[in-house]
Structures are given as structure tokens and as C-alpha cells.
Image 1 (tube, rainbow, N blue to C red):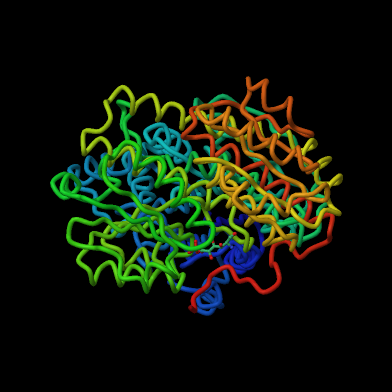
Image 2 (cartoon, rainbow, N blue to C red):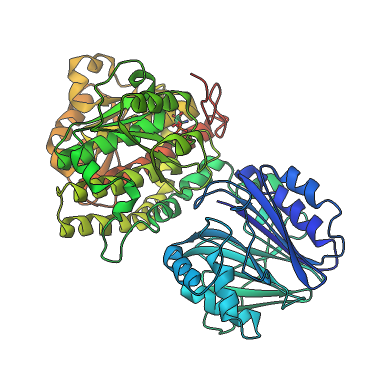
Length: 608
Ligand code: M6R
């Protein structure tokens, strides 16, 4: 998500941290800030917008500073603005922190701190941290930070400077990356390796639960309980371009691997201690939710495919019509809307022209509007009446992967909240689904571990010119996303079909030159799907089947099988899309396509 840099040594610290920050610019951000230790105090400069603006503001301002940190923020809690930009300080300005991640219990901590007289300057979750350190400080900064961190729940990479520790920089990590760059008489710290590479190739990667104190000639790492720990020094051999991608050849491949974290982050802070979805994620009153008589999910491309999954998951239990609609169609077709309609707009960027127009149409019709948006502060997230942010972090590859998976998680969480409010699900059923959702990151990891098998399939079919993706129910929704992924980055013709529709026309195209991806992950539709697999097999097509663990029947009629861990049918889309993303990626790689920026496509489609 956001970027952090820090420096201690003999150089002009502010110049170094701003230069380091530029190396993280590719990740996307909305504001930036710097903190430097000058004459025994900590000075902070922050600005909305580009790093270049911040660089002008601090140019030559603190030549004497030898300890500094900097941050680029990508908003999650609180809109993009200068007060919300990092770093954040305590009441006295003696402890200043930059933070990546999410402090889940910040609301209760903020309330308690406010009652004890602390004053807050921002809407961020981060700001509770320096105030906690201030409270815990009894003469040792390291101990105060340690104690403060023990009070927070959530994920963090934090770097802190303090006027009480002139010769030190403090850092800690939990579920958010942080690396230390080792120099001669100087140390660097950053959330990502590219930021330290111009200065050093010797790095230490901090582990979850580590707290580090950096001094010019020393790096000391302890665990949160204070026990000392040694971490290996690694020599980074990647070039700068590869380092931006964390050593991956393409952003897409990295973002596919980011998905377990994206799922966790999207769930973070949204589940109550009782294992229920926090109903506040809907932002709507219980009365308004109960009055709803129709729901539309409106979006484009991949986001529309997430809307289709929502339709299936929501409609079965909500007992009112739920429609998924393409924004480019919805905006011109005068849909039936009134004040008891909910229109859900799904968009990674929050800037897609058709989706924005659909939002305007929904509002004009008097409907309640809810955005499922990844980019905080984007047009949709500002203009929709209620917003659920997906917290997948910036997605750079044009082809959407982790944003889609986090949209699915959003759809499940919001759906459960709607069902509870409308009394269409019991607390026990809800808790069981939430528990299954919490297992998904591990299961996605298991699918990723099977990449070699997918590479072999890609090598075998790289010459194939037509791919059909077949599925029923939720598998059909995933088939559409799999086919889009493939055509988008490999330029191979691919289309998705509801498996039951094949014999109504498309079967005429099936020959031995066609490769069919048959999605058979839905236990309740398994027999029907097997019949459809047999139909295409009988026309000599090659069949690659995606099956759930324990399915022994579908493999018998398939040429190749990709087995997925099993979860309830409704959640299988999260697992089923991953091998299809990998297959698209490896086919495109073998065909030497421009994977991250496919021809004719843009990341954000801001025109109609
Ligand atoms: O930013 P959005 O989610 O609104 O974008 C919608 C589509 O343009 C987008 O999902 C597109 O289909 C992706 N490139 C597919 O990978």
C-alpha cells in the first residue's frame, strides 16, 4: 500500500529519504510527508499530491538533519488530505511515526485517548500510535514503542523518530513489509527493497513481531517481548526495475501472489469479536435495509464479474430480486428504480466513466447507492452515498487480479451484513461462513503452490487459438472472468459460456483444435457439469477441468485436471479464479506479450 523510508547517518537525511521515496512512486499514492530531527525537535512537512511538491517544500530546508523518515500515503482511513498525510505525531510532537497497514482497534483506542486528554489532528487510524507511545514513555523510547504496539490490533510497518532519542530510528513490523538497508556508518529503512537499492544491496528483512533500533553503526533487533533476535543479511542481486516488482518479472504475477494478503486486508476490521460481519460496513440504517425491494450491482469488466458472484450469493438468501448489470447498459436502459432500490457500484479505480454515470442515474432515480471501491478518495468513493473500501492496495497491472478477489470478499461481507439485517441468516450460519472466509488466504496459497502444473498446461496449449470456458452457476461467473483475463493479456480468442447453453449453438464450433476449460467446482451442479464435459469431449475437444478436492468423477472425463482445495460452493470462486489468472499469465508470458500493459487497454477507463 503506502511507502515508508527512513535514514540515519552522516548524509543530509531529508534528501536521502525523499530520494528513496521517489523509488516507491510507481506504487501510487495521494499525499506525502517527511519528519526530520533538527536541533533537538522533530519537524514535519506534509503535502497532498506528488512527491515533487513535497521535495520543493523541503528543498534545502533541513541540511543539518541526520535522522529522517518519509511516507507516501494511499488513503484507507480518512480521505486524501494534508492533515491525513503521514507522518503523525503525539500531542507534544516528540514522537513522530509513519505507518503502513491498518490499526483495527483504532476507534476504541482513539476514544480512550481522547478521554484522557489527547488531541487528534487527522482522521487516520495511525495517529493513535504516537499518542500511545507518548503515554507509555517513562524515559526509554524503545520500551514505550514496544508497549504501545502491544495495545494495537491489526497490521503495521512503523518507523518512528523521537526528540528523546537523537541518535536512533525505531521500526517495527506486523503483517506489512519492512526492510533495513545496511551501510557503512549509516542505515536505511524502507517498506520495499527498491527504496534502499541506490544506497546498498545488503538488507535485513524484518519478520512479523520484530522491533528494530537503528543507529549509525548498529542495528539491534528484538521481539515485541524484548528478547533479542538475529536476522540474516541478504545480498540483493535484482536490478532496480525488477526490484520495483519485488523481484517478479511482471506486476501481474506479483499481484496474483498478493491475493492472500488482499483477502486478509479486506476482512481486517470488518468482523466482530463474535465472528459476525460488522453491520456498519453497509453504512445504512437497519430500517432502510429492511425496506429494500430490489438490488442492482453495476460495474464494468472484471468488476462486473464480481457483481455476478454477488447476484448469486445475495439473491438466494435475500429473497428480493438482485440483478448484475453492465454499467454501459444500465445507464441507458431506464431500469426500474425507486427509493427502495439499492444500487451497488463496483470499481477498482472508482473512476470508470460508465460506472460513474450509472451512479448518477441511480441517484437521480432516488435509489440508495453503495460503492465497492479500491481507491479511497476516487470519484465513486466520494459520490456514492455509502462506500466499502476493498483494501487490496494499489493494483498496477492493467489486468485486474487482487482487486477482483478483494471485490469478491467485499461482496461476501456486504451480502452477509444485508442478510443479517433482513433476518435471512442465523448468527450460527453467518459465523460458519465467516470462518470459511478466514480460511481462504491459506487455501489461495495452496492453489498458488500448484503453479508448476499450470505452467505445464500453458506450455502444452500455447499454440491453441480458441479457448472456451464453461461453467454453471457461480462457475459460469468465474468462467467469464477467466476468459476475460486470457484474451486481455494473451490476445488469444477466448469466450465463456453457460455450460447448459453449448448445445443451443456454440457446440458447432467445437473441434479437436479447441481447448475447453471446464469449471466443475460447484458440488450441487457436478452431475450436470459432467454431462456438459462429455458433450465437448465427444467432439474431440481437449478438456482441462477445474475440480474441488474429493471430486473423483469429473477427472474421469477430463484430459487435464487442476484440483482446488474445497470450501463451500459459494466461496469457490475465490479459489477457482487463481489458476485461471496463472494460466492467462503463463500463456501470455510464453507468447511474449506486454503483460502489464496490454495493447489498446488502460488501467482506468475514464471516457465512455
Ligand atoms: O476500475 P474499474 O474496476 O471500474 O475498471 C473496470 C474495468 O475496466 C476493469 O475491471 C477491466 O475489465 C480490467 N482491466 C480487467 O482485467
